[in-house]
Length: 377
Image (tube, rainbow, N blue to C red):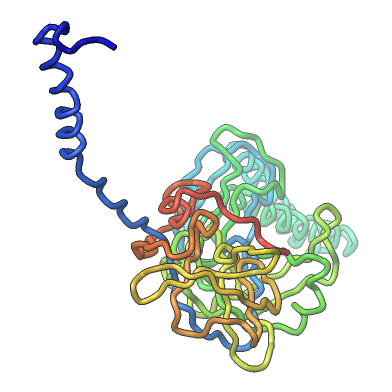
């Protein structure tokens, strides 16, 4: 055993100081700060009128879209409007080079002048009985034919100017200056602004139920807060040979200036379903032991997982059954549900005004840092 007297005094002092310094260092470390509550997107449950909504996406179109074309062939010498231009009935849209039609009209006028002179001469000769009635009738017939040809030539000259036959918006421009077009070749597409509607496609399996639907609610993809009343106006009886879907048109009853042609719109049909029932977004459903559940936010903003009963699944939401363990007025989490734990306290985040600020990411996914859940079919 080593005698302490044989250890130098400096080493003895160092051996005593090291435990003291370690003890002081341990006492100086404070408790780590609590983790800040995670912001999570939530929603307050509310009862919806009986039945779930069936949603289809489509494009805003006009009920009356006119294909405008020149009635004669020629070379475009002027195009006076661009796509998106608002025009009135009678406005000039484009012109053809009038050189050929001008020459044709001049030739027809010359033939008419000659035929008129010949007819007058034969009338005088017939009055003096120098020619037969048959000869005069031939000249009168030639005069009438020349008159018709002159009128036709002048009409052809007028056809070099393409005008709008009604007020509307130019939705398509298919001709440019210098382009040679044929008679009837589409140059413009003109859409009336007072008959906006949404063109949608109905899958084969949904045709029986869609036939029984009429009223709908229409929302814009750019602003889901803008809602409009819709009426199913047209449903094609024949499926598209390529997509195997049935074309349908839903009229927008109360359209305003926010509804622009070409916009993407969602059409929500409400299935008939009796009493009011709760609906939750598909992204709010969490699977626990193979059974659906939702995260309920308590008064202290702590999370609790509660089992639910799903009566049916829709395109973007699920209708809850009567045996579900939640009721209207409770707040649930609607995004990032598989990143949460029971008892965790969260910070309630308000939904963004435009949840599509970043392609492929919703506001809830941005907050919770999650990927969207697969929609149940």
